[in-house]
Image (spheres, rainbow, N blue to C red):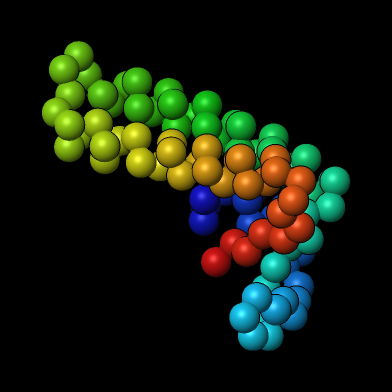
Length: 94
């Protein structure tokens, strides 16, 4: 993700949030435009990661190989679900 256009989507602004106590974090506001750009980016990343897995998995992968190769794909899907969930208002890249 560090070597992609992900870092160019939206602008990280210092934002004070309060969960148990106040904390200032660099967050991207998930407004409709940023959300849409992130959704498209993540869908493309998921496709590329899926192709990579298919190329590298082989016919009978070990459980360890399978877990190692699919971990990034699982994380991309988690991030995609968060961005698509309208209850989330911000995203922190770091």
